[in-house]
Image 1 (spheres, helix red, strand yellow):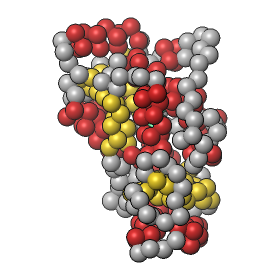
Image 2 (cartoon, helix red, strand yellow; image 1 turned 180 degrees about the vertical axis):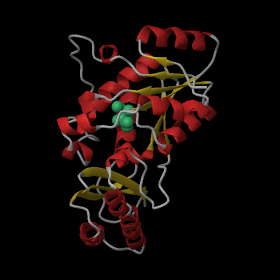
Image 3 (cartoon, helix red, strand yellow; image 1 turned 90 degrees about the vertical axis):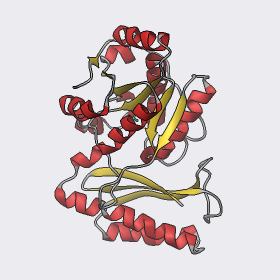
Image 4 (cartoon, protein in one colour; image 1 turned 135 degrees about the horizontal axis):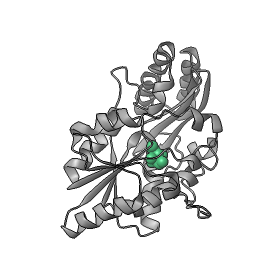
Length: 280
Ligand code: PAF
Protein backbone atom coordinates (compact mmCIF):
# COMPACT_ATOMS: atom_id res chain seq x y z
CA UNK A 1 0.00 0.00 0.00
CA UNK A 2 1.31 3.46 -0.84
CA UNK A 3 1.80 5.86 2.07
CA UNK A 4 -0.45 8.92 2.33
CA UNK A 5 0.91 12.01 0.58
CA UNK A 6 0.66 15.13 2.77
CA UNK A 7 1.00 18.60 1.28
CA UNK A 8 0.07 20.79 4.25
CA UNK A 9 2.18 21.36 7.34
CA UNK A 10 -0.94 21.28 9.53
CA UNK A 11 -1.69 17.71 8.36
CA UNK A 12 1.90 16.65 8.98
CA UNK A 13 1.91 18.23 12.44
CA UNK A 14 -1.35 16.46 13.39
CA UNK A 15 0.34 13.12 12.65
CA UNK A 16 3.71 13.83 14.25
CA UNK A 17 2.09 15.24 17.40
CA UNK A 18 -0.02 12.06 17.68
CA UNK A 19 3.01 9.79 17.12
CA UNK A 20 5.15 11.58 19.70
CA UNK A 21 2.17 11.57 22.08
CA UNK A 22 2.14 7.76 21.76
CA UNK A 23 5.85 7.70 22.62
CA UNK A 24 6.84 6.74 19.07
CA UNK A 25 10.11 7.91 17.49
CA UNK A 26 10.11 9.54 14.06
CA UNK A 27 12.70 9.19 11.29
CA UNK A 28 12.88 11.52 8.31
CA UNK A 29 14.48 10.95 4.91
CA UNK A 30 14.74 14.31 3.12
CA UNK A 31 14.78 13.96 -0.69
CA UNK A 32 14.09 15.89 -3.86
CA UNK A 33 12.26 12.91 -5.36
CA UNK A 34 13.21 10.90 -8.48
CA UNK A 35 13.86 8.17 -5.96
CA UNK A 36 16.40 5.44 -6.60
CA UNK A 37 17.81 2.54 -4.62
CA UNK A 38 20.01 4.93 -2.63
CA UNK A 39 16.95 6.76 -1.27
CA UNK A 40 15.16 3.47 -0.67
CA UNK A 41 18.11 2.23 1.40
CA UNK A 42 17.68 5.36 3.56
CA UNK A 43 13.97 4.61 3.99
CA UNK A 44 14.92 1.07 4.99
CA UNK A 45 17.48 2.33 7.54
CA UNK A 46 14.90 4.78 8.92
CA UNK A 47 12.33 2.00 9.25
CA UNK A 48 14.85 -0.13 11.16
CA UNK A 49 15.86 2.77 13.41
CA UNK A 50 12.58 4.51 14.24
CA UNK A 51 8.91 3.69 14.83
CA UNK A 52 7.53 6.06 12.17
CA UNK A 53 9.09 7.16 8.90
CA UNK A 54 8.44 10.28 6.85
CA UNK A 55 10.02 10.70 3.41
CA UNK A 56 9.99 14.32 2.26
CA UNK A 57 9.96 15.21 -1.43
CA UNK A 58 10.65 18.84 -2.27
CA UNK A 59 12.66 20.15 -5.22
CA UNK A 60 14.17 23.08 -3.38
CA UNK A 61 14.63 26.07 -5.71
CA UNK A 62 16.96 27.80 -3.23
CA UNK A 63 19.72 25.21 -3.66
CA UNK A 64 19.92 25.46 -7.46
CA UNK A 65 22.38 28.07 -8.66
CA UNK A 66 21.60 27.24 -12.30
CA UNK A 67 17.99 27.79 -13.55
CA UNK A 68 18.37 25.11 -16.29
CA UNK A 69 19.45 22.59 -13.67
CA UNK A 70 16.28 23.36 -11.65
CA UNK A 71 14.04 23.17 -14.74
CA UNK A 72 15.58 19.84 -15.85
CA UNK A 73 15.56 18.20 -12.43
CA UNK A 74 13.47 14.99 -12.77
CA UNK A 75 10.03 15.04 -11.09
CA UNK A 76 8.37 11.64 -10.70
CA UNK A 77 5.91 11.87 -7.77
CA UNK A 78 3.66 8.91 -8.64
CA UNK A 79 6.55 6.55 -9.34
CA UNK A 80 8.22 7.72 -6.12
CA UNK A 81 5.13 6.80 -4.06
CA UNK A 82 5.00 3.37 -5.76
CA UNK A 83 8.69 2.73 -5.10
CA UNK A 84 8.27 3.53 -1.40
CA UNK A 85 5.26 1.22 -0.99
CA UNK A 86 7.23 -1.90 0.05
CA UNK A 87 9.22 -0.01 2.70
CA UNK A 88 6.45 0.62 5.22
CA UNK A 89 6.89 4.39 5.11
CA UNK A 90 4.18 6.12 7.19
CA UNK A 91 3.87 9.40 5.28
CA UNK A 92 5.27 11.14 2.23
CA UNK A 93 5.49 14.88 2.80
CA UNK A 94 5.37 16.76 -0.51
CA UNK A 95 4.91 20.28 0.83
CA UNK A 96 3.18 22.94 -1.20
CA UNK A 97 5.91 25.52 -1.94
CA UNK A 98 4.27 28.09 0.37
CA UNK A 99 4.58 25.68 3.29
CA UNK A 100 8.36 25.94 2.91
CA UNK A 101 8.74 29.49 1.61
CA UNK A 102 5.68 31.50 2.60
CA UNK A 103 5.14 35.00 1.22
CA UNK A 104 7.82 37.27 2.67
CA UNK A 105 10.17 34.43 3.69
CA UNK A 106 13.41 36.22 4.63
CA UNK A 107 15.63 33.80 6.55
CA UNK A 108 18.76 32.01 5.37
CA UNK A 109 20.64 29.39 7.35
CA UNK A 110 24.32 29.60 6.46
CA UNK A 111 27.03 27.27 7.81
CA UNK A 112 30.51 28.83 7.68
CA UNK A 113 33.74 27.00 6.85
CA UNK A 114 32.59 23.58 5.66
CA UNK A 115 30.65 25.31 2.86
CA UNK A 116 33.64 27.23 1.44
CA UNK A 117 35.16 24.33 -0.49
CA UNK A 118 34.27 21.82 -3.23
CA UNK A 119 30.51 22.02 -3.89
CA UNK A 120 30.41 25.36 -2.06
CA UNK A 121 33.09 26.76 -4.34
CA UNK A 122 31.59 25.48 -7.59
CA UNK A 123 27.92 26.02 -6.69
CA UNK A 124 27.80 29.38 -4.86
CA UNK A 125 24.79 29.63 -2.55
CA UNK A 126 23.96 25.93 -2.91
CA UNK A 127 24.61 25.01 0.71
CA UNK A 128 22.73 28.02 2.08
CA UNK A 129 19.71 26.66 0.21
CA UNK A 130 20.32 23.15 1.54
CA UNK A 131 20.87 24.24 5.16
CA UNK A 132 17.79 26.48 5.08
CA UNK A 133 15.42 23.85 3.68
CA UNK A 134 16.80 21.04 5.83
CA UNK A 135 16.45 23.17 8.98
CA UNK A 136 12.82 23.77 8.01
CA UNK A 137 12.20 20.08 7.28
CA UNK A 138 13.76 19.06 10.60
CA UNK A 139 11.53 21.52 12.47
CA UNK A 140 8.41 20.76 10.46
CA UNK A 141 8.68 16.98 10.79
CA UNK A 142 9.87 17.11 14.44
CA UNK A 143 11.85 13.98 13.61
CA UNK A 144 14.15 12.33 16.14
CA UNK A 145 16.53 10.96 13.49
CA UNK A 146 17.37 12.02 9.94
CA UNK A 147 18.96 9.78 7.32
CA UNK A 148 21.32 11.11 4.62
CA UNK A 149 23.44 9.32 2.02
CA UNK A 150 27.23 9.56 2.13
CA UNK A 151 27.11 10.14 -1.63
CA UNK A 152 26.64 13.82 -0.64
CA UNK A 153 29.26 13.61 2.10
CA UNK A 154 29.89 17.36 2.33
CA UNK A 155 26.14 17.96 2.64
CA UNK A 156 25.97 15.35 5.42
CA UNK A 157 28.72 17.14 7.38
CA UNK A 158 27.08 20.54 6.90
CA UNK A 159 23.63 19.35 7.94
CA UNK A 160 25.07 17.70 11.05
CA UNK A 161 26.92 20.91 11.99
CA UNK A 162 23.78 22.99 11.37
CA UNK A 163 21.58 20.79 13.59
CA UNK A 164 24.22 20.85 16.34
CA UNK A 165 24.74 24.62 16.15
CA UNK A 166 21.00 25.38 16.20
CA UNK A 167 20.23 22.85 18.98
CA UNK A 168 17.72 21.03 16.79
CA UNK A 169 17.09 17.84 18.76
CA UNK A 170 17.73 15.38 15.94
CA UNK A 171 20.39 12.74 15.29
CA UNK A 172 21.82 12.95 11.77
CA UNK A 173 22.77 9.52 10.47
CA UNK A 174 24.98 8.94 7.40
CA UNK A 175 24.34 5.83 5.30
CA UNK A 176 26.68 4.25 2.71
CA UNK A 177 26.46 5.21 -0.97
CA UNK A 178 24.53 2.72 -3.07
CA UNK A 179 26.17 1.94 -6.43
CA UNK A 180 25.22 0.45 -9.79
CA UNK A 181 27.03 -2.80 -10.65
CA UNK A 182 29.44 -0.60 -12.70
CA UNK A 183 30.34 1.30 -9.52
CA UNK A 184 28.48 4.44 -10.58
CA UNK A 185 27.02 6.11 -7.50
CA UNK A 186 23.22 6.14 -7.67
CA UNK A 187 21.90 9.65 -8.23
CA UNK A 188 18.67 11.17 -9.50
CA UNK A 189 20.82 12.95 -12.08
CA UNK A 190 21.77 9.60 -13.66
CA UNK A 191 18.26 9.68 -15.23
CA UNK A 192 19.52 12.53 -17.40
CA UNK A 193 22.37 10.45 -18.88
CA UNK A 194 22.08 8.83 -22.33
CA UNK A 195 23.25 5.17 -22.65
CA UNK A 196 26.59 6.51 -23.94
CA UNK A 197 26.77 8.96 -21.02
CA UNK A 198 26.12 6.12 -18.57
CA UNK A 199 29.06 4.19 -20.06
CA UNK A 200 31.32 7.18 -19.64
CA UNK A 201 30.09 7.88 -16.09
CA UNK A 202 30.75 4.26 -15.09
CA UNK A 203 34.52 4.89 -15.36
CA UNK A 204 34.60 7.38 -12.53
CA UNK A 205 34.48 4.98 -9.60
CA UNK A 206 37.18 2.75 -11.13
CA UNK A 207 39.47 5.76 -11.65
CA UNK A 208 38.83 7.00 -8.11
CA UNK A 209 39.59 3.55 -6.71
CA UNK A 210 42.89 3.64 -8.63
CA UNK A 211 43.74 6.90 -6.86
CA UNK A 212 42.98 5.32 -3.48
CA UNK A 213 45.26 2.34 -4.25
CA UNK A 214 48.13 4.68 -5.16
CA UNK A 215 47.57 6.77 -2.02
CA UNK A 216 47.59 3.66 0.14
CA UNK A 217 50.91 2.72 -1.49
CA UNK A 218 52.26 6.07 -0.24
CA UNK A 219 51.93 8.23 -3.38
CA UNK A 220 51.59 12.00 -3.07
CA UNK A 221 48.09 13.18 -3.87
CA UNK A 222 49.22 15.90 -6.29
CA UNK A 223 50.81 13.36 -8.63
CA UNK A 224 47.93 10.86 -8.66
CA UNK A 225 45.29 13.59 -8.94
CA UNK A 226 46.83 14.89 -12.18
CA UNK A 227 46.83 11.36 -13.61
CA UNK A 228 43.22 10.76 -12.53
CA UNK A 229 42.11 13.98 -14.21
CA UNK A 230 43.65 12.95 -17.54
CA UNK A 231 42.15 9.44 -17.13
CA UNK A 232 38.68 10.94 -16.62
CA UNK A 233 39.04 13.15 -19.70
CA UNK A 234 40.35 10.20 -21.73
CA UNK A 235 37.30 8.16 -20.61
CA UNK A 236 34.98 10.80 -22.13
CA UNK A 237 34.31 13.22 -19.25
CA UNK A 238 34.19 16.72 -20.73
CA UNK A 239 35.31 18.68 -17.65
CA UNK A 240 36.77 17.84 -14.26
CA UNK A 241 35.81 20.48 -11.70
CA UNK A 242 37.77 19.04 -8.81
CA UNK A 243 39.52 16.00 -7.43
CA UNK A 244 40.42 16.53 -3.79
CA UNK A 245 41.71 14.56 -0.83
CA UNK A 246 40.30 15.79 2.46
CA UNK A 247 40.16 14.80 6.11
CA UNK A 248 37.01 12.74 6.69
CA UNK A 249 36.14 14.67 9.89
CA UNK A 250 37.04 18.28 9.18
CA UNK A 251 37.22 18.36 5.36
CA UNK A 252 40.67 19.98 5.66
CA UNK A 253 42.81 19.36 2.53
CA UNK A 254 45.45 16.61 2.74
CA UNK A 255 48.58 15.97 0.67
CA UNK A 256 48.88 12.32 1.74
CA UNK A 257 46.40 9.82 3.17
CA UNK A 258 47.88 10.08 6.66
CA UNK A 259 44.59 10.04 8.59
CA UNK A 260 41.01 8.92 7.85
CA UNK A 261 40.38 10.67 4.57
CA UNK A 262 37.95 10.86 1.68
CA UNK A 263 38.59 11.34 -1.98
CA UNK A 264 36.10 13.68 -3.65
CA UNK A 265 35.52 14.31 -7.36
CA UNK A 266 33.12 16.36 -9.47
CA UNK A 267 33.12 16.03 -13.25
CA UNK A 268 30.81 16.53 -16.22
CA UNK A 269 29.78 13.76 -18.62
CA UNK A 270 27.13 13.99 -21.32
CA UNK A 271 26.06 17.45 -20.06
CA UNK A 272 25.43 16.14 -16.52
CA UNK A 273 27.41 17.12 -13.44
CA UNK A 274 28.31 14.05 -11.37
CA UNK A 275 29.82 14.02 -7.88
CA UNK A 276 31.19 11.12 -5.89
CA UNK A 277 33.44 10.40 -2.91
CA UNK A 278 35.03 7.32 -1.42
CA UNK A 279 36.82 6.59 1.85
CA UNK A 280 40.61 6.30 1.80
O1 PAF B 1 20.24 15.62 -1.07
C1 PAF B 1 19.17 16.12 -1.45
O2 PAF B 1 18.38 15.49 -2.14
C2 PAF B 1 18.84 17.55 -1.05
O3 PAF B 1 19.97 18.34 -1.01
C3 PAF B 1 18.05 17.65 0.27
C4 PAF B 1 18.88 17.16 1.44
C5 PAF B 1 16.77 16.86 0.18
C6 PAF B 1 17.68 19.12 0.56
O4 PAF B 1 16.87 19.64 -0.44
